[in-house]
Each structure stands twice: as structure tokens, then as C-alpha cells.
Amino acid sequence: MLKYTFILLLLFGLRNPLVFGQGKTEPILSSKDTIKNQEINPLAPAKAAFYSAILPGLGQVYNKKYWKVPLVYGALGTTLYFYSTNNSKYHEFRNAYKNRLAGIKNDKYSYLDDARLITAQKFYQRNRDLSLLLTVAFYVLNIIDANVDAHLGQFNVNDNLSMRPDLNPRDLNSKPSIGLAFNYKFQ
Figure 1: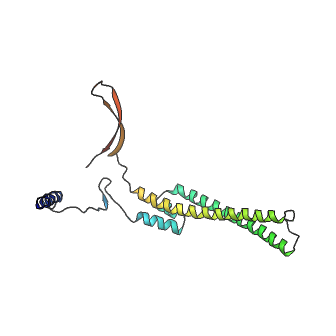
Figure 2: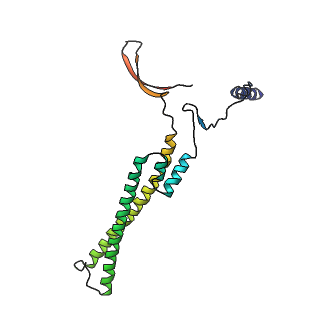
Figure 3: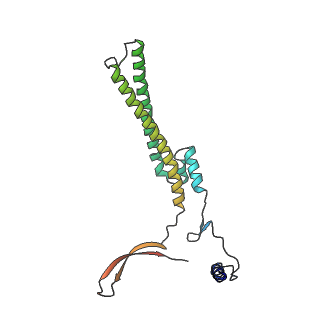
């Protein structure tokens, strides 16, 4: 048992760079990208998401993705338009049905019976609720997009990272075989 403990301590000691006295070591979590030589801002994704939560599209402007702003406002504007339209139609059919129950017959939906008024009311209520759900979904998607885009803006896309097909001749019959090589150069 003592022998195994000594071997484990020896192996652990060989892994530790301070055992060999190499002096000052760099911390494991570094905030500087060694390949791009630029500082990484870990709060940039949170800031972009916050900006998009305050004003939709502002996170995309913060990330300098200006072409996404019309998409954000187009999606939110379209769903809000359909919410407003379906809400007004729902209230029209609801008021027509309530007036009919109260005995008032001079409305613009006098040609519809009670069952059709209820069906139309349910139809527009369902579409109104769906439009509101889509509006909230596009709002949240706007925030997520700003956050992910800020994360990927700091992603290393350097020529030292590459993926290219690799053709190697076979040893037996000298025919080329197709493969894929992933290369990463340490500097």
C-alpha cells in the first residue's frame, strides 16, 4: 500500500511544474488570446444581451452586426401587428356576441348566428395568443442572438487553425487514399 502511495505521489509530482523549479508560471485562466494578441472581454456577451433586453436590436449594434437590426424589428413589428389586428377582431366579435345576448340586433354581424360568433371569437383569440407568444419568442431570440454573436466575435479564426483534405499514397498498392487532417500550430 505504501509503495502505491509513493508511486502516485511521484507521478503527481512529475506533473506539477513547480516541482522542477521553473519559476513563475502563468495562471490557467488567462484573459489574453495568445494567437490574436488582443484582450478578451469576458463581459462583452453579457453587455450585448443586456443591451438587447433594454432595446431590441441594440445588442446587434453593439456587436457591429447592423444588418440584423432590420430583421429584429421586422420580426417584432410583424408579430405585434398581427397581435393588434387579432385582438381588435376578437373584441369586435366578443362585443357583437355580448350585444346579441343583451338583445341589441343592429350590429354589422347580424347575418351570423350565435355559434359562428363564438367560433370567430375563439379563432381570433387563439391567433392573438399565438401572435403574443411569437412576439415573446422573437424578443428572447434577439437577446440570445446578441449574446451568442458576442461570444463568437472573440472566437479565434486564424490560419493556424485549418482543416483540409489530405491525400496519402497507400503502402501496398500506391493508390491515393482520401482523408481529413486537422492541423493546429502552437506558437
